[in-house]
Image (cartoon, rainbow, N blue to C red; front, side):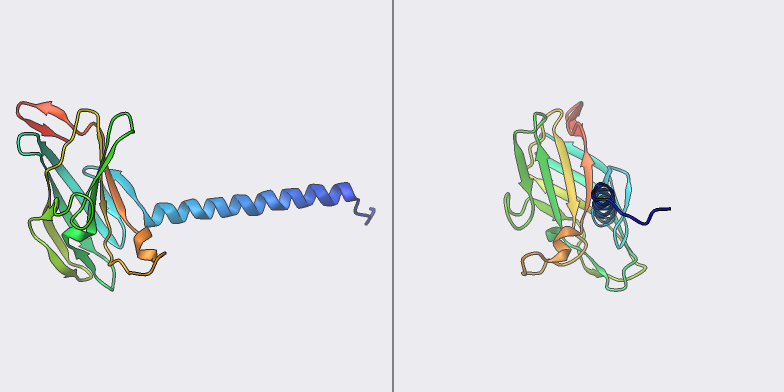
Amino acid sequence: MSMEFSRRSFLKYSALTAVAVAGSGLLSGCELFGTNQPVGKAGDTLSLEGAHKLENPVYNPLTSTLTCDLTIKCTSTNGLSLRPERFEVVVTSADGKTTTTYNPLGTKNNAVKLTQAYGVINKGETKTSQLVVEGITIQKDDTVAVKFWPRNFATVTGDPYQDIYATWVLQNAAKKIDTITTV
């Protein structure tokens, strides 16, 4: 067996090694994304430092109000927070050209409220509340995304807590049922 290593062999094995390293980086990135930013639909329980469920979304076009039931269970030793500023609701038009964001702090101020807010939910505790978004407009076939950040935001740019959130996507957000529209 020859121990000689040609230039062609060197380039071939270098390219294969580069592809393998790049591919493994992509796979680990996908796993990290999925773990820290779970996505589901209404009724799904999303795992993110606990078990969180958003269900029974109802949109009332007469009052421009969206309501959803929430159940937040903490499995984190550091505790979680169930407060309005931990939520954001984004409505995207059916054609994807218009996006409106509702939250308690930025655009559409004071639109997102909770019927029951909690400072800290300790490990093992389960709390329920109802998410209420006032002044919201949802048209037929719009997509509504409800995002929940269970941890505090830091003021430092690039804070890792900003990248850790759960999202429930509500498709066909305005299906007509008499005078009340459900999501």
